[in-house]
Every structure is written in C-alpha cells, then in structure tokens.
Length: 245
Image (cartoon, rainbow, N blue to C red; front, side, top):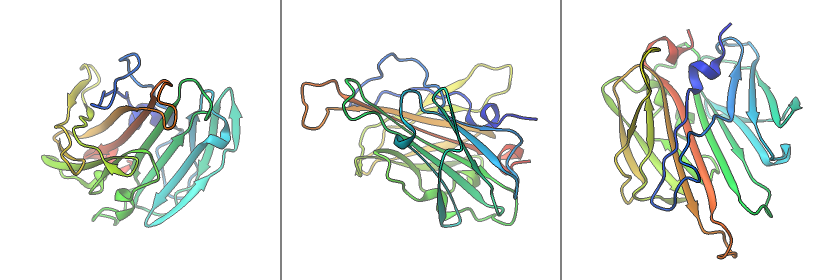
C-alpha cells in the first residue's frame, strides 16, 4: 500500500512575490493528500484536506477531467481534517482543485489554493484541455498545456493571475524531483512577464511542486494586516509516476 501524499504531493516551498512576503519563511505544509493505492479506473480515491480552523462550508474541492467537473462534499470530518471520495471513471488526466477560505472577520486571513494533477493510463496521449482550464481561485497557477504530458527537456508554460489580473514579476518557487537520498532541489523560476507568463524547464522525471505566496492590502480596511494568498501546483512528469503505474 502506497500513500500518494508521499508519492505525489511531496514538500511545498514558499515563494515570496513582489507584492508581499511570507509570514515566517518556512515551508508550506500540504493541505491536500490522497490516501491508499495509486489511482485506478473504477476504484474509490480518498482525499483528505487539512482545513485547520476553517469550517467545512469554507472548503471547496473540485475534480475535473475531460471537460466535466464535480464538486465533492465531505464524507467525514475529524479534528479539522475533511475527507472526500471520488471514483475515476476513465483513463485521462485528472485535476483536483481545492480552496480554503478564512473567516471574513479574522484578524489575520490566509487563503489557500491547490491543484493536484494525476493521470490514469490509457489512450489520452494528447493531453487534456481540462488540465489547462482556469478555476475561480484568487491566486491561480494555470498550466497552458497538460503538465502530465510535457516531454522531458521542454518547457512548461505557466500563467499567474491574482484577482483575475495577470501578475507581473512573480517568481515561482520550484521543487524538482530528486533521488531518495538526495536533498531537495529547489529553484526559482524566471519572473513572470506583463502577461503573467513564465516557463519552467521540465528536465527530470518525477514529482514537481510549484508554489507562490502573495500578500495584498485588505479591501476597505487599509489599516488591517495584509491578506495572505498561497497557491500550490503539484504534478508528475515522465516515468511510471506520471501514468499511475
């Protein structure tokens, strides 16, 4: 039995964008985890979201594939951890998108957005347009091609938006795959241009994690502490990790 949280989610690193800085400079712990066997067609996939102090109503989990999407409802809540279940029905690239919103009246507010991509092996060799679709995430990392189908040695284009506007000069933090006995390989992607675009060279097979932290003044409350926005994107490139075997 293999836990996908160790296979697919990995470690998540903070990036400070020009709009603000991380509160503590430490690693962001993953909030979305997949438990049990690797995903298979027709088998239940269990997802756990660490909602911390957030209520279940403030957490959204959406699964998208082949142009269709489904919002999941929690089946269990224990100590702030919400459990969701979904059953993949076909071979394709899947994206799980999560949003965790803070209480509106909190003194310090943090929004958390995640995207996790996984692929079930099959004839979907050309990639999936669902993987490149945008979600209503305030701080969003959107691949312009299916990240599960990027050939090694080529670039993965990423667009960064904040409040639906292209975010310029943001520098994604990128954790590259390494061998088990090697330290994490963390790099900084080139700053996004005026269109919010940057390219990441995919030069190794395994799990990749992109992350960004951005802060912004709270609307209609300029004297309050700035709001914090965290966005994370995780996928596997090349090899058996990318096709679920």
